[in-house]
Image (cartoon, rainbow, N blue to C red; front, side, top):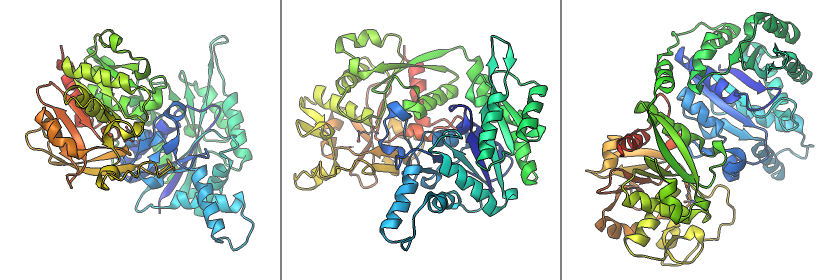
Length: 538
Ligand code: GLN
């Protein structure tokens, strides 16, 4: 049977629960075990799909098409394990399941309550869809003491009791602050946080202490004494220079060793940290850098394009370069300013996006990249905008637009149903925005003699999608006659997946999101290739 590891947080949020969980997953996996990572989110949204990137950071998409919390991206990047739909749950989804069952009479008229009905549903989720895993690591979102996370904390308490304490381990991550004025390290917030956790019936087995500086032994002893945890299980995590150091740092502090000791399991293999060491060397020592402009709507919030930022960094690592991201707000990008704003830029990237706001700025920047032969990468919405730009300025279809922006103009981008049903538009009939998109892995066939085929070194690829609208295949000939090649198509030849421009150093648009599949230990070929082209751009 799988062993379950529950990771809770205390004192403040953003201490790196996700990164700690993912690093632990890497270490256990490297020791020869099969691991899954799960995230239990306390918010009421049924899934993060309709949440604004402004508020919550990017929506991460899995192979099987789930729209999940961005922490699952961290998990994948660090552990190399592809997440699934069954790895992310929110309070909203739990309640919606329970209420659906209640409406169907599934509780036979009983009073439906948080305990046991909500907690039972949470416990089902924790156990669901696992087979042959040695470890399931479950991260509980938020911090202990939040009203919203209470049912989760109660459920994991019950769960440990159900499977037996020898099969369940509680890790609590807290902050151990350093006070500059008095030059002191303080353990009190950790003590309070553990007290809170214990008042909910959970005694942590391991405490991870996040700190700005190394925590002296006497302070760790104090935490051990007051929190009732063995001194070996008080593990410090001191701020690292780059997140890629995290697995190495946790291994140095014996996190993986203590976890195995708790379960009385012997390691199957020696941990291999060499790939991380290689990356760290490049990241910390490389002096050479290039500037890549990301032109989008959500440039103010750092996490809005988390996977994209990471994928570009991976591309840099592959090319022995540092990639500086220059975020440009497309809404305030005036045509007259483009030349100035793009000074010193070696590559332009337009990421995924929704809605008309800010599109004219994006289109103008694409035109600039096309004419000035600056490497250009359009992702999802970015590819759609490149199509509109080309249609307007090269094919002379001045009214070219996307039906996402309303029923005016020539919808070169639209819903596939619009051009498949004898001109009878059925757009707008679906008012429910959640769950109406093409989501998850889809195949694309790559054309011979194309740049894209050279990049992937393959004829058939699979990438993750998250979009409603498509480029209208009926315009393909017109585009191709003018050197914009539809170099990747869906296997049934109906949907354009990739476009590329001839006689341009690097101009590629993709309808999917390659950034979700890029990992530091295996950078995505498209990002490696884009950064290489940017490196060669004068
Ligand atoms: N808004 C566009 C669509 O729905 C693109 C989505 C995206 O970039 N992820 O098709």
